[in-house]
Image (tube, rainbow, N blue to C red; front, side):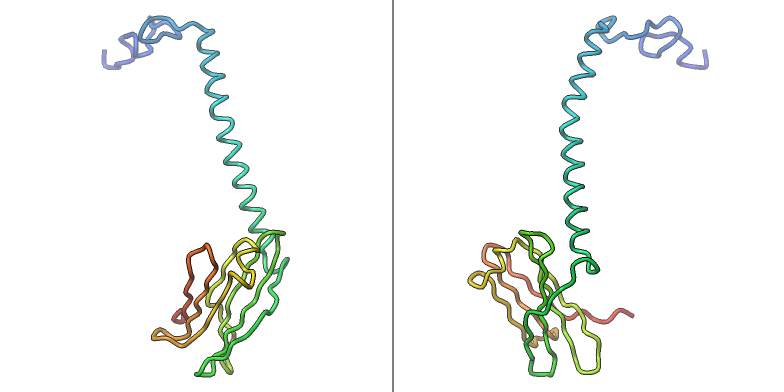
Length: 160
């Protein structure tokens, strides 16, 4: 009697335990089949939804690959200390536009300060504004898109 499953208890699955029993006695095979189909019917839409979400995320990210869809220069703004902030944009999907802001200094490679991807209408002239200045933390870009929280981008310290 060292093995608890060898006792043959109803819930232990022992030798005298009938297959397909539940707490109220034997389970009707038709009920088991119905329950199985109910479980499949409930889980199938959830699995389909997860697969569709993954598909659209992957499709969007692949469309915004720099090699496939490069940025175009939009404008530049010079700051008092000689730093220049460049705005670039791209439209890789019909209704999505992405902008990024690069900082360049004489003799240094341009560095990205930030980027924003929103529906195209959020970048229309009447609802979109950006400004650049030198703040306490260095170059700073402030972006306003009506209907979306404002964004602030700062120069990040170099990685050592």
